[in-house]
Length: 346
Image (cartoon, rainbow, N blue to C red; front, top):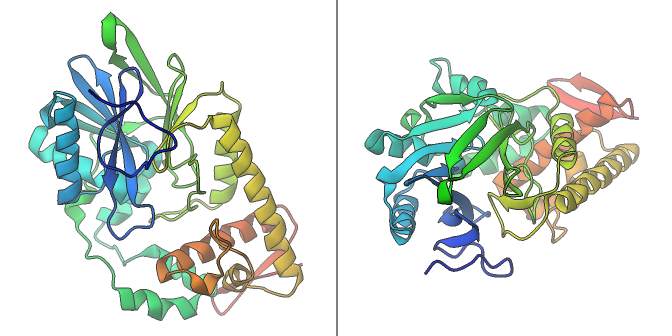
């Protein structure tokens, strides 16, 4: 007997949880990651399954996914395809590895193609975010990040998908009792350029990936190739899903139970306040993204920048950069560059 999902329970606990007819949530672990887990959704598709996202290519995640499917009376050989919301390793890489063994198809948003081309290209120069961190004035973080060491690059988990998902593409699944379930892909750039969500309008569901999360805001523009205006893209993508019919939110991280419109309104308000606080810090004389980030509170616990671990301090600094760039685009600050470092004034 598969239990119904409980919004107030521990969403990271391993197992299988029914969140809608024919839809099951499977949390998989993220070791050494503050997010703790990623939700994979198994959606009934005839005598098999379509899986939305796949998890990180880790032995523990593989074992738990196999065990979860066994509870559903199936195995990985019954997975017809992976529909992946975006190219980050906790969503994409396990699909690539499992495809070699079982041959299921892997589909990814078209907007992720430039990032994968860089990751797999012969001229890969290492993590692009370190260069962006330098431009943000975050040189003080570089030794701390270097001390942690970079994970070795394994190109085998970054192979290209079988199919590129175009905005508006529809995936027709064979649902129970002879019906059909239609998942419509919606391009929602911001967290990454190629992020997509999957709308099941008939079922009143939105598989929201990292675009709309119930407890946190996603990092913006942390990818191999960034958009010139990732925060503006993200806000436009939030407004896109807000303009659609409301739906139950099935997020990649965090519990189920929220409605999409409710959470989108909260996220739009959050970024509005963040833009105001960022502008205020520049007006107080802070000119680099790193300096501004140090003046702002972080996480739900309002921690200081120097209280964050090096990776999250880097994410905070880069997120501040995109807020500053949006303020510059709106004419509220003036952007300049000196010795390769971006400065902002009012």
